[in-house]
Length: 259
Image (cartoon, rainbow, N blue to C red; front, side):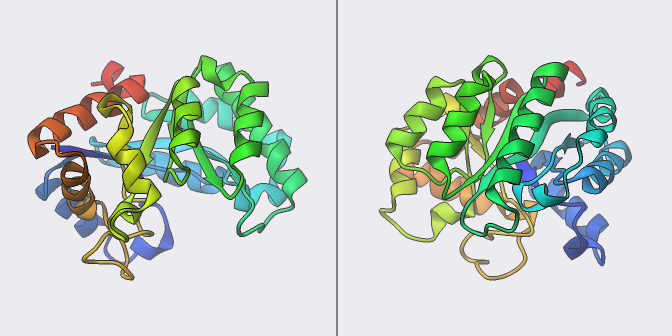
């Protein structure tokens, strides 16, 4: 059994066949899926899915791409959403200096506000970090994010970066990108990281693993990423499965508390 720790089932890409996608994921061996909020509207949508499907969880957050539209007046609404038992984290939040779809100043301020919200409500963080490693780590340290910890979603740093994340009480989450190029820096991180620090995710509808690269990703495809990670580490698939289940529930304590 597997847990997809990061998918976007609320997105329009799944409007035509969302029930089938969810059912097929469970049939292919997923026990649970966490679907991710990226602004206030999608956070409500993610929670609606979690209330509809017993084995789906939700998060609330404000993605850096949307930071230009962030209004601090929505924070009380997000805090109220975060109290609902099906909500397991604050995220997806962070910085994206690759796309730069929002001004960097807006991204950084929104990021800080969301970390503070997470500390207020006592939930872990889900971090988006693209081409902003130094800035993300600096803000997390300044905002004392290590006190609540969380997950670096779609981890994209090298081993030196990974060690800093681990030292701050964060898990490293691996997507299908690890299947794209053998011998990559990401495989090096997967090989060297403690097994108890790893999570798996699809980031569906994005980053489909081989053999589905270039197509819409689905939670059911997590098994291909899992098989690749097991091979890179030389870890039996059953052992990896058990570790991922335990790690995900440690990363998101409400999943255990609400079980």
